[in-house]
Image 1 (cartoon, rainbow, N blue to C red):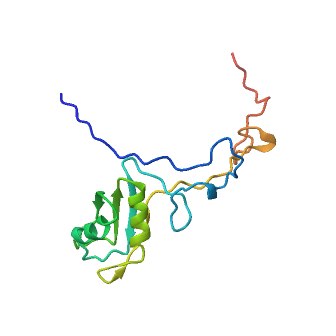
Image 2 (image 1 turned 90 degrees about the vertical axis):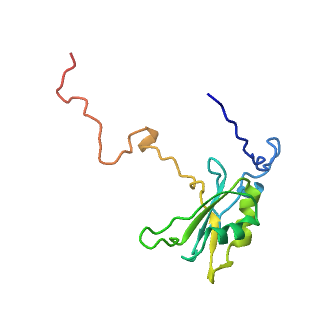
Image 3 (image 1 turned 135 degrees about the vertical axis):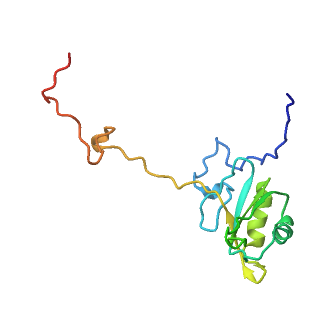
Length: 160
């Protein structure tokens, strides 16, 4: 049984303040990639995936390779097609190996024209916003459950 090894480009860690400094903990001190809405972009398992929307239905893979290839090496390009017509559905996923290539594509291609249609480009995966962890009444776990209550102490059932 032969084993194959593949090498993967690894992005350098994001810059953050040293733990000893008294810098504020806001995201302004970190250089995390952001989407156009301000959400933090995250890496997929193999690379950085961007979404291209408002793609003309007659766009070809060569058109997209030419446009997005100038920003870096494309790992994969996925063009979902309409089953009935065979045309592009209007969106495309482009995967880059490095964050710098993906950021360059988002910054450079967003708002450009492809076959007379203005395309929108942004990161495909984002980190969900932080949520508040809710505890029940008086800090007891489970006491805040809606529609459910605990069994009364004297329910009449005896344990044997």
